[in-house]
Length: 309
Image (cartoon, rainbow, N blue to C red):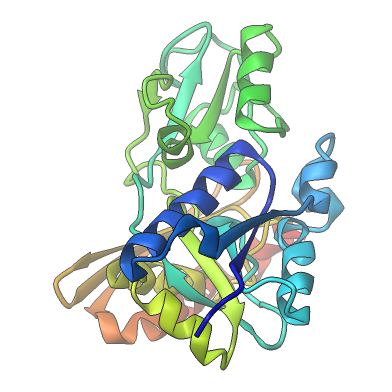
């Protein structure tokens, strides 16, 4: 019988804490456990500490997870809670993504200062975004727009926007909803034209492979449709060696036992892009994503990817 609290690791940003508390609350409800049986452990990651450069310059997505994963491996943490889209496709030996919470809205949101939509921004306007995918999609839509790297916590970015540093910025609607800011967006972008990042809107839980006690704890809160969709999207990303250095969009949707996937790759300047779709049974989620990635890589040709280096 468990006597010590389960230790839940998280980053310290407001959004990360909301996600950790949601995970704790779902576990409390699923297992009828008191709050004292869970301890939220906050760790600072290098990705949080370095905010003046893009992730692609300082090492990629793993900068948001490394410290948490070290504590998981050592046994100091029982689980770690993450934004799924922040997770590298290759995890440290002995760890895996063991559960997913029900997915939030996958759309990207525009917060405009000088105009409400990307289309209505004045010629030569400046848009701030830390995502290479968003930057490429903005440039595809509006080649005249100047896109600058824009990192930091949500409130930091919103303050920079209000101070006039940029004309608009883009954020994930899921994060704004979880932070209680659903009314801030001035435009919600259609995923068909502005595909989200693979795994956007999904909270994942990372734990040790073979830890039966923790697996049983997490099984009760795992949302299977989210798990299947994100598994497909991450397989697509993995087939393309996806990281923060690569503009990639991908979205899988589940209807009963059927999975439908659409993926997009772009050059960083948005001038070239390729799309692909796939569908099949949810049990083939990994295979569908991987084959879609391999197919779009062949479709684009090797020269296309030279712009990603």
